[in-house]
Length: 187
Length: 91
Image (cartoon, rainbow over all chains, first blue to last red; front, side, top):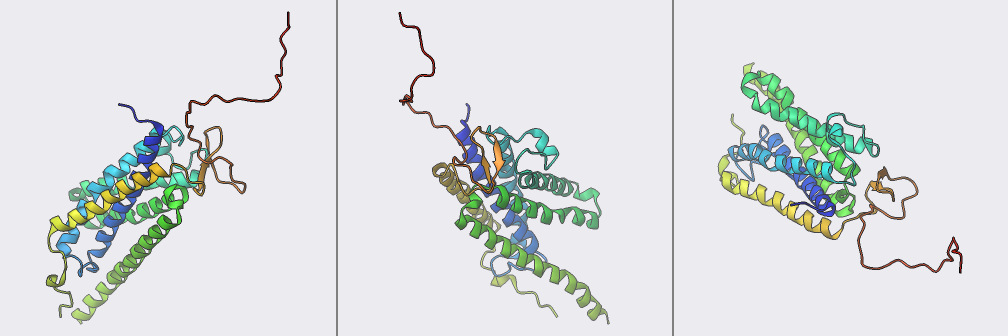
């Protein structure tokens, strides 16, 4: 069975947007855990479960997007471009950000698989790379995405990004507040 | 003092329900975007546009007249009214 270039192109676009959506859900559920931001919607154990489960959603879609772009005869992206970013003859930054995102995501996944061998701070250090990975994936989709050039989808993407930014801000405030609360309780 | 809200206030307490919701959102996006992309193969507003010879190039100040070139094969034979450039010897 062979897929014609048009079908590959359609699938590459659809899987790209779907993986970004699933990645955003994974990010939101992860950020929301400590400050319990999603408590009105779901219990923390449910949110934690979905945070792990979301990987099973964005990973296949992300892989399908990468394979689709590699197979698309119009994209002119090769395996070498997956290893060395910013080398594509056109849109080097836009496409290179996608490569960086894939590489960072791989580091996060490998760290999650080797969590038992890492100290909590080491694991957290690697896990926090997912913020950069999502940022790179988001910019990649804005700067190179055919669909994210449609105003309605750009609007949705920026609303999601704003929600994630607010959640990240609250997560950061929570992290700074915790040591202060602990100090107050000790004194 | 425990200021954490009680789990009893949460709408969803089932892992399966939230998993189903998240799966539904992702797959609806995938099928929806597949249908949308199938009916919008090209987007002239896309930041990356290929040139006419099929190689991609970043959008410039002067946009290319033809966007992402995906050839459609038709059964029409191209014709021309231009005069021939070569002449054959008539016997």
